[in-house]
Image 1 (cartoon, rainbow, N blue to C red):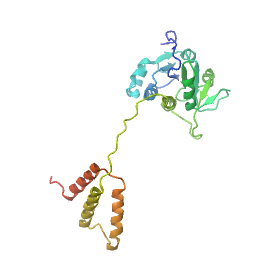
Image 2: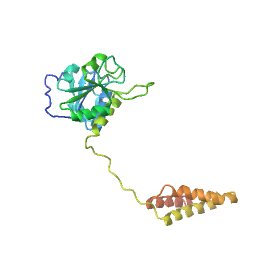
Image 3: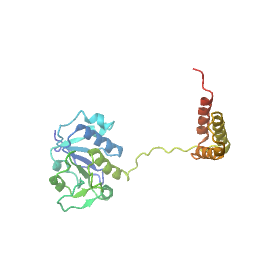
Length: 250
């Protein structure tokens, strides 16, 4: 199926960028890319000549709930069709090319997208080989990241998430709720914990030889007070010690 005939350009000044997967090979990787997109607020996925056709039954499970991205994904016959409504096209690659084009990082590309009018698109190549030189030639700018020269292989979802994350920095996305930490336990609670454990260790014959007892107790106290336990944590630990001291009959 080709959606190039039906697709209408957007009139937005700076809409979210489009993610275009060029000749993707595995449905599973398309699903993982969709998941990476939705994690950071992107939903416009376009597929150029997917090897196994579309829809692909392997994409859904790999998307882990990013169904909206897959359901709205559009299929095109060529990169030219997929990018027809895009004013700015970025080709992602980690390989050097014999092309004279601007080269930017994902962060720089994200900043540019927010200041340039028109729709932007990122091209991602097939899993095994990445974009071909002719694919990159269609783009106006190359996007790449510093990477280990001895191992410059990124999988498709990793590449998508690098770009999507940088774009998301300018968006208002939900962050994990902050949780106010409980205050540290009073010193008396800590003293009670230390004394409780010392008494159990005395009964077990742990403190030996006698000349090392003071140093061992100091170390023990340091270990128990370093984490800044809160009152509930101290009570829990006291409960553990009590259970070890007097196990319940089975």
